[in-house]
Length: 224
Image (cartoon, rainbow, N blue to C red; front, side):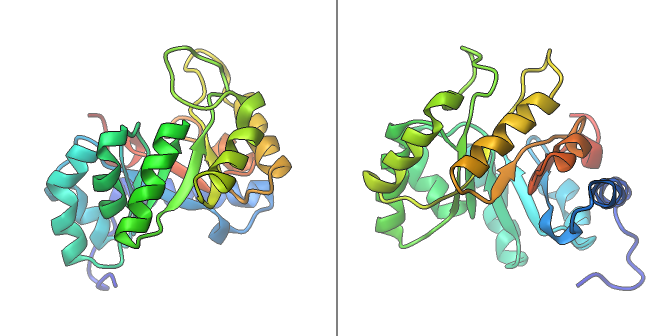
């Protein structure tokens, strides 16, 4: 709990204000929108003031970097949730399942199988999102939109996974809203309630189109 005389982190306060406004504009409940504060490249000394200001949900892009700073932070602040929002390699599945409370980047059968094995072995159940390559960019990870239904079925039937949502990163050279709308449609068609979409430059648009998790780094912490 934040002490009464503790000033809230300025960047966090502004992002919260913008999320509140975007939720009102969209006619949505504010509690349905979760802010994932993205901490890649930032050390514990930069993260601590944001935790003290009441932020509980954080995101990291790389397993190895997260392992260098988050075990200590989570030990000091047991209520924190850590989300993996960057690519996962199968040889890091054990470490990811051990450390993260949610994985947003399930993107192929090899990863689904590895995560499933580790969840059983470790008796842990992180929330799982499937990453969708909405722009069909060859350099980017993710399931093609037309393959989402079949992949979700394999996650369930072959790998024994419960997927709760979808995630996307729109192409940088295109308006993001059509990609957010596509992800929202795919989630509805497949009965999924969670949408991880929207970053510092476009999270208000993502909220307008149904985002439940917005991944915001530089608008909170400043440039890297």
